[in-house]
Length: 312
Ligand SMILES: Nc1ncnc2c1ncn2[C@@H]1O[C@H](COP(=O)(O)OP(=O)(O)O)[C@@H](O)[C@H]1O
Ligand SMILES: O=P(O)(O)OC[C@H]1O[C@](O)(COP(=O)(O)O)[C@@H](O)[C@@H]1O
Image (cartoon, rainbow, N blue to C red; front, side):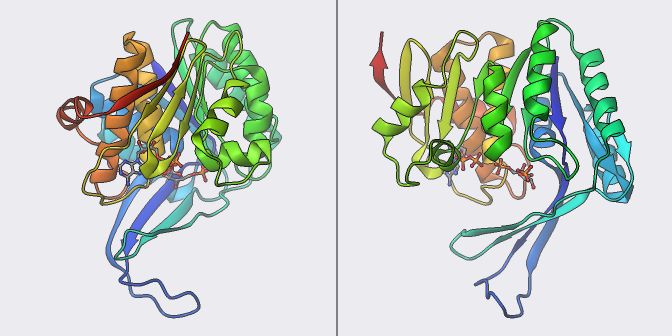
């Protein structure tokens, strides 16, 4: 079972505008909304692959109810901790050139008691063959040490962790050595304090320092430039697929879902990469944060171009 944890889910509102005018009036078209947030998107994608998944995290108010119902309608198991306030709504605006502007709310304030409830719930849900995806921002009131603590607890139960966060959450979380880390290029550059224009050679040498006895995969996603998969034995560059883009929101989450599903299914590294890159390209082809179907992903995965950059 793949368990996803979303500390700060969101209704993702995606809308289009000809040209975004900062400080001006923008009239939006093609507005749509999805149940979102990083882990929620991962679960939606796993379900689209035919996998079994459960979503946990915090939900609040009518926006939380919308997310819970939407997931249940998709036959995704949910087991959230309900808190006071309102789950956030994040606005994603795409202009005619597919340039994306994201306006993400902070989310409800979470108290220590609720954090403890969620920690306990996650520990109860973990079986020794579970894979737990910890991804995304946390709301106010949650200590940035949270992922570090959770990864340690989850590993004690014998479960494996796939981790996708940024800033302090990332910096602290990776110290607990999750199985997989998926920073994007900018998150990696920020963590190491290097230029955002970092080249592939430097990305690889920095990412390699994050590998250890437990962290076996570091995946650096680079948007349209593809992704680099780094393990102790191999470094593989996967080009992004050239697809008709409708929304890149959720592409990273689809990649995380692809990696997680591949690990659960016991795919080879090459199959994992093909699957993850195809899943992310498939997500780009759909509007909003809708996942691509398994049929589309299977078709796309044969088109992924891989280059082995290093092999031991
Ligand atoms: N415009 C695009 N066309 C095709 N694939 C894309 C595009 N944008 C992203 N992807 C795929 O999605 C993956 C994750 O995207 P990225 O933007 O790096 O993640 P994140 O959302 O976590 O920042 C990329 O490695 C790539 O394979
Ligand atoms: O938790 P964060 O970092 O605020 O991100 C939340 C947002 O990220 C998303 O999960 C999309 O993430 P990606 O584009 O990185 O896949 C949205 O659904 C959501 O609004």
